[in-house]
Figure 1 (cartoon, rainbow, N blue to C red):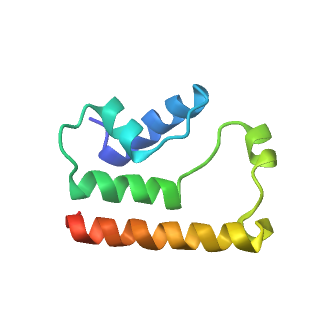
Figure 2: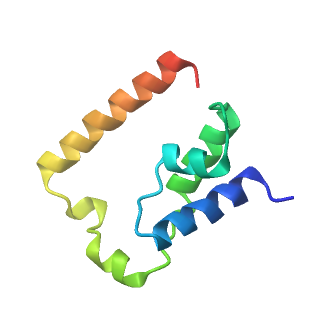
Length: 93
């Protein structure tokens, strides 16, 4: 049986092939998981942080590196990430 991390990577690859951004909600829906578990969240975050390899090199060329983003976008991204961290903390996930 595949580990949760392997399942997430497989589902994420399928979503990318369909031209969709693999969000936690889409991955969770494809896996058929009824509830949000800490293991699912951790495996998804690990995939996003480390194993997020695009299958299409053209897609990589279109995405600017994080250090190439304008300062206002970096600030917005930092603000959004902080809010997401707060939400996750409040939910106890």
